[in-house]
Length: 192
Image 1 (tube, one colour):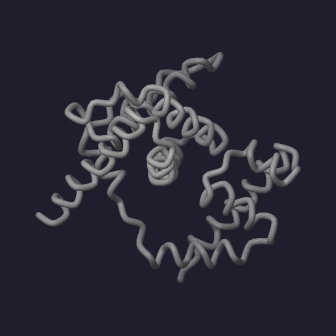
Image 2 (cartoon, helix red, strand yellow):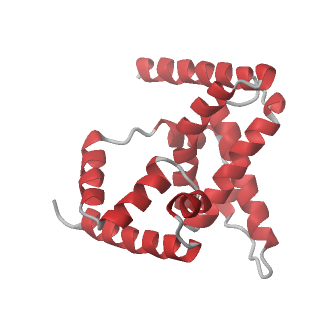
């Protein structure tokens, strides 16, 4: 237990140092380390809130652009980088929902994200067994669907980036991803 706490503290210091480099030196390498680590976690967080994949992609991009633009506002004495980023993503989602023509009040649990919850979300290790099963399930998809899943979730590319790179219409990318995820959900739920 003590080792896990020490590891969390060390991680918080590491990410604070990366953020400091972004803030003071506009260090792109530090930003990319932050991006590579937090983008998939933010996407998972937003999807767990019920956000559509395409909206989650855009909100994650916006959250990380906010990090780049407002890096000087980050204060490691007030919150960890994980907490700060989850809060930015949550606030962007709330703003997105409120812009909808017929928005309903956002679910109660979204109104606050405490430090313990954000630390728990950030520190959840994915088991290697689950990763292996997921990799095998992706490998069983039709080649185009497998490529789209890898680009979207393993390479953290937005739908528009995928469209440009593969010269595919946005609707085709989205519908192919939906079909791929339906197949993945079916194969991941199947008894092992």
